[in-house]
Length: 497
Image 1 (cartoon, helix red, strand yellow):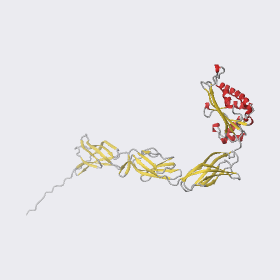
Image 2: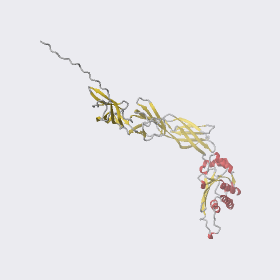
Image 3: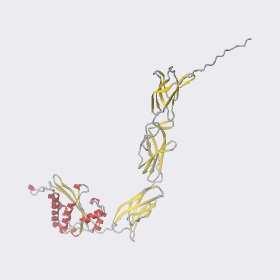
């Protein structure tokens, strides 16, 4: 079906230009036809068979066409995928490289469907100025072209081509004429890069400029900022312009203008705000707030996790940030560094850089932040992590003939029990002692069962952070009771008189 459409389209175009060809100024000029875009195939779709039919029709009417191979080669060399990437500079460059006066582009906007429709657009561009000088668009359908008594009605897309092409191209004649060479210098600015774009005062800035000139290159290329001009030198191998200068001492935002100078007459063209850089001398400042932690004995402490809320005091563009974890003695355990802005909140569960939980203890957490100019800010805090309740030691003592139970906390924890309860049982399960309390150590008196050598302790306690310890049937050995030594009795005597 599409092949028939191309054939009908070509025959209709030949017929129409034959009728109006005497007025077409393009017939006396070289024309470059770009591949027809076909939006029915997607945004980057092209229709080469359709393009060939248009080219053949124009050639048969005496219009001098640039060969499609040359057009496609130009597009490949200039990375031009379709006319949607075309700008005035490339139109002028095409006119110069291919020696043509007119660039013609076309688009198939609609084709096919249950009720056949067809949409076409043509645009002619002046290859000297790069500007569009003529454009026409239109669409038609089977419904629009219904005829009286239904005689000769179009039935397919092919039948729609001839009247639509006639409608679009009948005003082309006499419209396209070669323009005059413009006075302004033509160039294509690919981009300006500054490294770094954020600096401290008096630091070095390097500039790289990529620019293509259609005609003569300027004699001088420079950049200007803060009334200071720096000339750029061109690398003969790459054609890239480069230069460097020292940033001003004062903080601030500095726009950069491009200065182009041509010839002995010193024709100067200025491109304003081509780029910019910023001078930052002072660090932004950092402050940390810690949530989900308890204040105990003038120390921050937690058992599960803490919420770290960093605050940048003076908002500036940030480059990176880092987190350090050290022991209370200053030994670095881990450091983690990240690019970009610091998050608004972080959760620390007491893990090291390897993801494993650290042991209970006291740690120093430090946050660092660097802005894009390299200025550094930091803040730190100390925190105690205690995930486990204190362990206990239970033993019996004998003092002054009394049996005593002594319970103490083992070293290694920062915060002791805030409450506890215990029960001491005999070897056969008899309750010998029950007690509740708040602090350890404790010493309690009890009466053992005669002849039993073992005791059992049930202990439950909760420390000041909420960690719980539960000991069930903890065995305690009863010490042997040493027999009390009896003092020999001395009979008293009285001197007789």
